[in-house]
Image 1 (cartoon, rainbow, N blue to C red):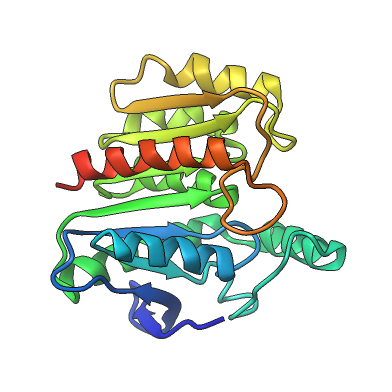
Image 2 (image 1 turned 90 degrees about the horizontal axis):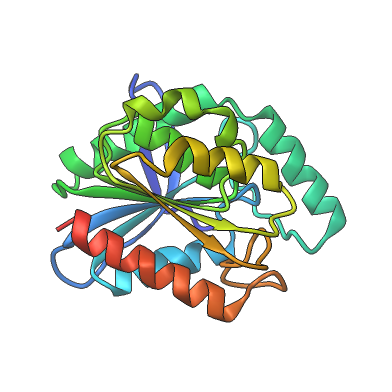
Length: 232
């Protein structure tokens, strides 16, 4: 994994490795690309590169750096999939949100980019929700976020726009969990939920067998429009 940048933690006593993709010219805003459980792999770097091509500063921090820096896993390989699950199980989400805060601060103070969004996938979808509730991020998007239905008691703290993409046949977020998300968030003035009928977890990945081209293009177009509006 090419993590070409070290971002200081909030305490300043350590550094978060990150893949940074820069646009030509002055960035119109910044987008944090929050990984799945597979590390900052080729797919996540490709997503960052795409945002940079659209004029954004894109930053993909290494979420598991405290456990094993530089991990890069393939969900199609069973052994690597199990390792990814173990890393996710061992991840300290409270510390992880502090890392996201550190990245936001670095973007605004060191890179002089005032507007910051975050887009996350799978575990990163959960982190997108947590970031919306716990930080001053300007806008957040979560794709197939897990366990959000268990964190609805934090929804009152969401003060900036949040979009969630929900595949209805998600093998990791069942129908009951999806129902709770809709019941808890449909009337929230800052939250937009989109369902994708018949699609499964991972439908918007860049590389691999899980991708659904039509679904990914639809969700990504909505995300691009969302950021264009709220990061302007």
